[in-house]
Amino acid sequence: MAGFLQQVIEGLGAGAIYASLALALVLIHRFTGIVNFAQGELAMFSTYVAWQFTAAGLPFWAALPLTLAVSFAGGMLIERVVIRPVEGAPELTVVIVTVGLFIFVNAAAGWIWSFLIKDFPNPFPVGAVEAGGLTVSHSTLGVLAVVGAVMGLLYLLFRHTKVGLGMRAVAADPVSARLVGVRVGRTLALGWGLAATVGAVSGVLVAPLLFLEPNMMGGVLIYAFAAATLGGFDSPGGAVVGGLVVGVAETLAGAYVGFVGSDLKVGVPLAVILCVLLLRPQGLFGRAAVERA
Figure 1 (tube, rainbow, N blue to C red):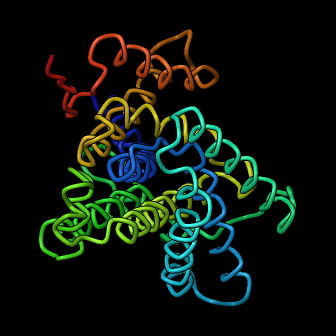
Figure 2: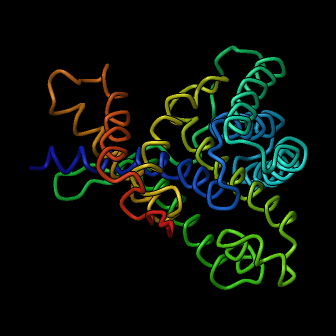
């Protein structure tokens, strides 16, 4: 039993990282209806920015807020320069634009910082907490705490601020929001900036577990898509729950399903996506679209 609980704890740590990137995907989809295939690459680019700050001599916890500020500004700039010109275009056009953004950001990171692997500092102390036969690393505890703090701040933003109220109005009905005086264009830019900031958190959290290189977020993006699909693309809370469930499912499958092992764990999120799309396309916490005849 202790071994099972140990695997669950490790899965929660991985799932929290997936949840943060899934949350960024859901935020953009709620505000604009766009599925941003470049979200992982934007997180990777932000992680390189954080690495650059630390390489220049800044402590990690001083570099982090600067990185988040750069990510926020970058997200708003991308919405204004890349996304807004195709606003209202067919869905396939928007998909192609985000895939093109994926390729561009990946190539830009390789051009600026090279494709050589780099070490990224771990912001959490080495060691673990032991209790009841279970071992929980400080890194896992730190990741869970950071993602929990992000969720709490987003809740306060959306529920208790004027900006958050405007963002909720735009997400619900942009036409009506514009009629009551909400500046929809600026709000959409804020949404992209916020999503880029949340995505940057996932990149900074996963980099110490992997090596920093331009393709590091490819696998994480697959898990994030599975989490957002499971929780529902219109439910931020569902994205977090979905990320935790996917992380635990992946870890348990790797540990207890013989033919999966460590090599086929990437098949777990793909299986989750397929099952959800077949059984409940709107996700566990999403709302099904209803059209009147």
